[in-house]
Amino acid sequence: NIVMTQSPKSMSISVGDRVTMNCKASQNVYNNIAWYQQKPGQSPKLLIYYASNRYNGVPDRFTGSGYGTDFTLTINSVQAEDAAFYYCQRIYNSPYTFGAGTKLELK
Amino acid sequence: EVQLVETGGGLVQPGRSLKLSCVASGFTFSSYWMYWIRQAPGKGLEWVSSINTDGGSTYYPDSVKGRFTISRDNAENTVYLQMNSLRSEDTATYYCAKVRRGVMDAWGQGASVTVSS
Image 1 (cartoon, chains in turn cyan, blue):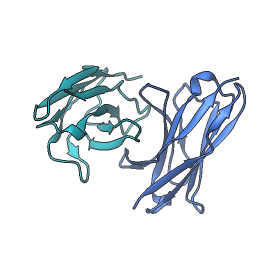
Image 2 (tube, chains in turn brown, red; image 1 turned 180 degrees about the vertical axis):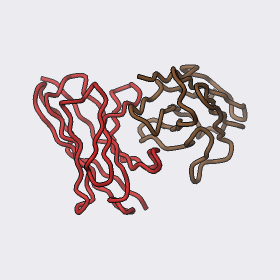
Image 3 (cartoon, helix red, strand yellow; image 1 turned 120 degrees about the vertical axis):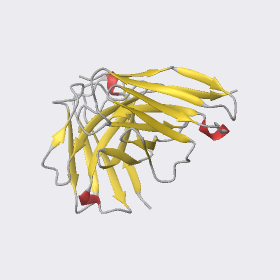
């Protein structure tokens, strides 16, 4: 089974900074990746699908990129409301494996 | 507005069964695949099951295969998760999710399941 490895596990960032987090697949998943944001006490929300497509209503400071095995979620000019866990997920073919997540904290 | 409401969670003893329901509204339920996803306390997300639009195809990871069964009633806009032979490691919040083009674009608020004696 494909393993999705996210890094870093956590990061502490100041408002206005640029953030990059990574997701590495153990095999080629082409562009079959989604990114989700989960704030404390809430359900996850879809941010990015098929590696680089921003979902409806997602601010344009969120950008997804990558293909094959290496993927990146970038947040330009982080806002206080972006403090959350971020998960990547293999999509389109089962098993639909998630990464372990990256926790984004604001200083 | 899309809404997904899970019910049926609770405390159950190891080895027993529990059935979760997820009632959908705000979209044409019969046109979409549905997934169940779970999250153990303080842990990440785990895909638990998938069902296609007419219920004729279902999918599970090895961790629940043979114990969990997903089903749906398109007339009632409801997807179910029958969980048998429950184990302590099944303790989690269970979310149902609407799937569009292979991506979960709407999630319920979750139902809490605790497996303990």
